[in-house]
View 1: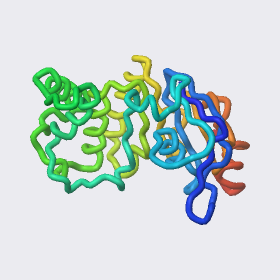
View 2 (view 1 turned 135 degrees about the horizontal axis):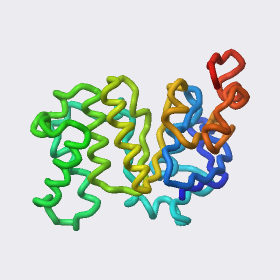
View 3 (view 1 turned 180 degrees about the horizontal axis):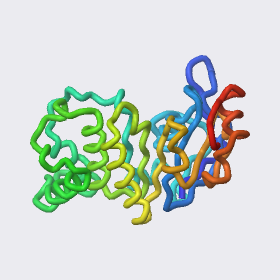
Length: 239
């Protein structure tokens, strides 16, 4: 379980990015995090991951989240990743195996087999020896998904994974995430496309610097909560 208690984050000049966010996320689940630009969606993930300073508490498995990070796989926004770094696809995916290796242990036959199996699951096995710079945005996002697979983490955090990728890659990623949920994983996804919320997420967190709603998607994804987050001019058919 993931839990935050009065989680608060301030940036420059004491501007609040998140204010007193308290929530619980029980898995297995694919939980979406939605809200307008600047709502604190990515900030929430980074605070739980101890990437940024915060007030309050962040817990995973009832322990301080920073002590449980070996159980978490994190895929940051593509805009924060250097595509030009000279590394091949298989090598990139193999980084996910490091969490299970000793300090000076090298990636061995077993780990490379796991890498190839993961690439096959995301339909990229034939791309294993290509440089990551040669991939499309969607292909690279699938590589990062394969890296999560070999890491075999209980918790998976994805920050805007579908921005700028093709529909085929998006479908493959969602199918892969569905399989992981069925295996007992807890998945958090920062997301912006409201039209796909009902199809993608069984639980939902709605933010706008404060927690506006959290719970089953069918219960909290409605016009009332969306107007609180996005304003009165929101048009969302069927919500």
